[in-house]
Amino acid sequence: MAEKKNLLPIEEPPELAQARAEMVEKQLKRRYINDPRILEVMGRIPRHIFVDERMQDAAYRDGPLPIGHEQTISQPYIVAYMTQALQLPRDNSGVVLEVGTGSGYQAAVLSQLAERVYTIERIPALAKRARQCLDLLGIDNVEIKVGDGGYGWPEHAPYDGIIVTAAAPEIPAPLKAQLKDGGRLVIPIGPRWQQELVRLHRRGDRFIEEELAPVAFVPLIGEHGWDEYQFYE
Ligand code: SAH
Image 1 (cartoon, protein in one colour):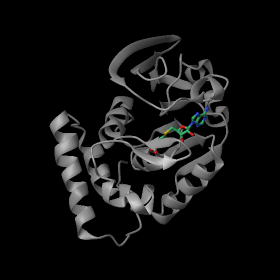
Image 2: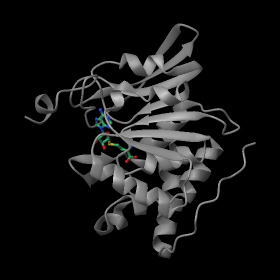
Image 3: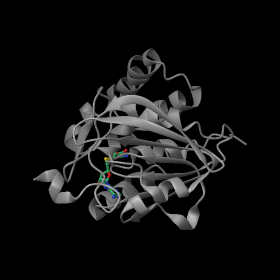
Image 4: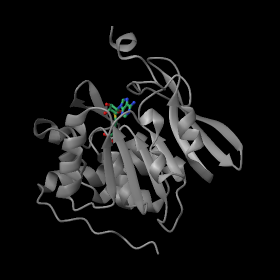
């Protein structure tokens, strides 16, 4: 059943609640994010707790924000767009893998639209902070692991949806292998500064590939992505 999961209430200034409502109206609805479940969830999850306290006023702006360690929390529209592109089971019964936990915000959004979310982050400090944010909201269906997400998380495969929030030169083979029949993988693919958001739809042993939109993501580092030095030299 697609019952709404409850978040723990948090105290927040009314300006932030207002900014969040405007984000949904102006940044999402007007740009054809039309899945009511996604609009409802993003209207509910306090994005500002996922960014540094000094930047909370900017949390609902129409852009990405730094989260430390040279990483960013994606623009709200991109979070909504990628979530919509996954086309998760409508009864929220899906099992999802995210590669690139970052702040934990995307995982929080997914947690409300899936049965379980598994998410992998290579930087331990970010994984720890993400866990704290999710705990603050009482989100208990997200599991975070520190490691190289390019290998996926085979123990919990196959996945209804796999979302990669860092850019790779090509689609990591282990992720394709861990996709359920009928499932979808959404990943930015391409060179360093500009990539194409790609969606793979698995049909048996066939993968239908679509290019969705031009995007710019931080790099996926590791065996199936970029070499750290190559990128930051
Ligand atoms: N989804 C995040 C945004 C992530 S930014 C959010 O909602 O805030 C991309 C993240 O991918 C960064 O935190 C980066 O450290 C991480 N990353 C890069 N390469 C990775 C890899 N091979 N495995 C796991 N995480 C990786």
